[in-house]
Image (cartoon, rainbow, N blue to C red; front, side, top):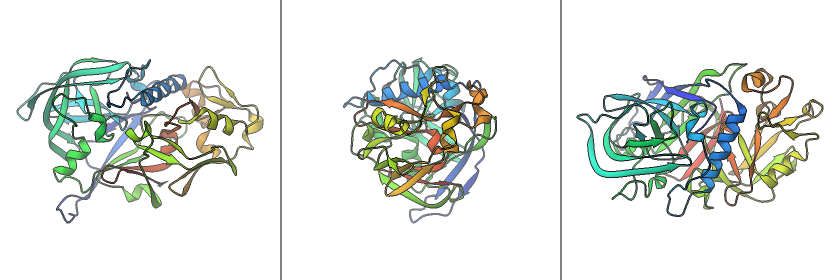
Length: 398
């Protein structure tokens, strides 16, 4: 379900632990490093996966059941975050997903319930576009570095499609997304919920740090997930928080409002826009009217059929302006160097050396889902997903 141009392997050791107790006796934060890699980078695949993911976001029903869409995203592990998670005594390779909330295993390596497992007697079923799984629901001990969660709800997939090369998903989306997925249960507590309730972290917060790839590399050990708060060594300045939007379907996810999008000093958005912040989307996407308003300021741009990206002529590249997003009263800016694919990576990702490819694409006409801020935005800004206060935070990446 998640496709990103990266894969993660969460380290077994803790990168940094702040164990000072809060008033409730809970640890403050636990930070875990991860690495990212791409086995066969290809922008066409990434763009296709992103579009299919966006279609799934827009197709969420009122009953909180995911409806089918023509998607192949779950099948493309090259564009997934994958982390090693211990369930009971077994270790599984799971897709890390802020766009869903169930955690489950068994798509590849089969789950063998051990002494710490308890069969709840419930069944579970979730559809992710063309990918889906169904099976039995257990509780078991889940280990992520130093975090040992003893009563985590885990799905055991007796049937799974669209998850080649991985064992399942670890979900970091809002708890409400689990509604209707497990029989006899209204909602299922997420990893973050249980880490908090078991006293392992001080608040129901996930901090995410990305960094751009360097040179022509397709792998890097330069990411971090922080449970229970934000890692102040990974950002500079202050954090701007903005509430989760009330506009559906963005409100079902980590959705926010952007009050203004500008190219240089020219506004390209007509009003406040609701959309989604998503670690599982590779690029940045704008609804068609905003997309057109942006690119009409750039002479000679065209959509490249080979990569699926917008190509900027060399004659226009030198005069490109910053693109800014006003969120929660703060302006977050991307320079041309941050929204244009670096030349060192062009050929490695299926492009033509010497061409300039934009990392901002057309989302289509969406009502209530007018943008997606994916990895290419989040590589420049540290992001915080605060379940307790129903808000998302951003700060400049260190």
